[in-house]
Amino acid sequence: MNFSLTPALEKFIRERAESDDYNNASEVVREALRLLKQREELQALRLEKLRQAIRTGDAALADGSYTEIETDDALDRFFAGL
Image (cartoon, rainbow, N blue to C red; front, side, top):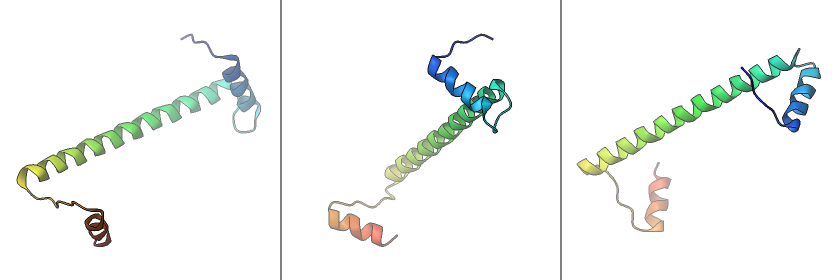
């Protein structure tokens, strides 16, 4: 596998590799990729939770099990009751 880095990223990787946290540049890149993968997995999980919440809301609208709130005061009372 071959890839190019900007000078700034090369510098960052070199600096991190020279720190006491990593032994070499490969460890820095592997850690970065692990973090990217973790972030994408978390984003996918959040997106699925949002989709589930939308499905739940759509179902509630379809069967009429919702609370209609028309004013700011009614919204404040609703949240105060939670």
